[in-house]
Image (cartoon, rainbow, N blue to C red; front, side):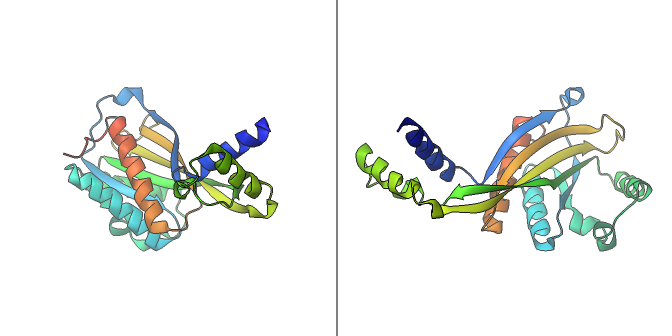
Length: 212
């Protein structure tokens, strides 16, 4: 009985969670007062529309904070993004960016994908009529034993990093954060949530100022 109750509570909590969750973050102690002035934003994905949407939302937030930022879909030629590059090719591109005044790169990419199972129940947010514990428990107990309610879903492990271009060495990583993104049904909404998570994390790390 106790185990069943714990399982039901965990299920309800999971279903009410945000579709994007920050797992961890790190800031280079050598850059305690780093203030980027001109950032290139790169979203690494074969989905061109998703990449443009993500990059555009990030640069919009940065521009609001008076930080000059441009998206890779504007700066890079399509031949660079859509084909494999050697280390030399990438270094040449970095040198071009530096000569054009860029001091930082913010890059976001999918590091891995996990396959999981979810319990296909209605969100607890809609169950306000279940005000008595007995009714609430009874409702979810019945669904708990209906094993066909389980469905598979994917969790995308996404990493976002900020690099200092002018310190092009092993210490050029300024900031890094990892996020779990639950299988998005609405890519536009998910990108919006993810963008806000990144911006908030950068604010907390005191790399960018808060919006005034």
